[in-house]
Length: 203
Ligand SMILES: C[S@@+](CC[C@H](N)C(=O)[O-])C[C@H]1O[C@@H](n2cnc3c(N)ncnc32)[C@H](O)[C@@H]1O
Image (cartoon, rainbow, N blue to C red; front, top):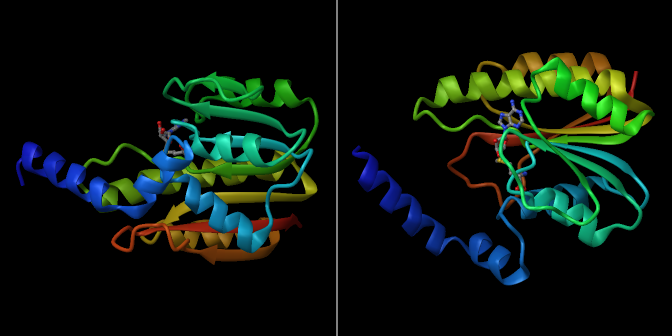
C-alpha cells in the first residue's frame, strides 16, 4: 500500500476511535493513557508516594496519569523523544538500552523503586514480526533492569507482543517474579498483537 494512502487511513481510524476523542476531551496526550488506567483498575499498580520509572514515556500520557491521580510520587520518565514537562517529574531524553541511561535512573533514585512500567515500542517498520522481535528485546531489557532495581514487593509492567519473543519473556518473568499476569486492556486495539505483562513480588 502507498505511504500516503496508509497515513490517510491512519488519520481516519484516529477520528473514529472513541479513546482518541476521550483523551482529547480529558486533556491527555495519548489514547495510551486508558491502557494504563485499565491495568491499574485491575491490578492496582500505582499508589500514593510510589517511586516510579516510566520507560518509553513520550508523549507522556502514562506519566500524566500518575502525576494527576496520585500524591507524592517520585517519577522518572525516559524516552528517545523529547516530551513537554509533566508536573515535577524528572525526564531523561535517551536510549534506555544504553548503560549511561540506566546509570542516570539509578543515580536519580539512589534507592530501589516500587514500579517499573514500560510502554516502549519501536517505530513500526511495516514488518510485524520484526517489530515484535525488537519490541520484545526492549521488554527483556526492562525486565532485567527491574530485577535489580525493584523493591522486593515491587511491580514490573511491560508491553509485550504475541510473537516469537513472547514465551522467552514470560519464561524469564516467571523465574524472576512470583505472580505473573498477561492482560490485554479493552482499549488496546483488537487488531494489535499487543498485550501487557504484570509481574509482582520478586523471587
Ligand atoms: C507507544 S509509545 C509510548 C506512549 C506512552 N506510554 C504515553 O502514554 O504517552 C512508545 C515509546 O517508546 C519509545 N522508545 C522506543 N525505543 C526506546 C528506547 N530504546 N529507549 C527509550 N524509549 C524508547 C518511543 O520513542 C515511543 O515514544
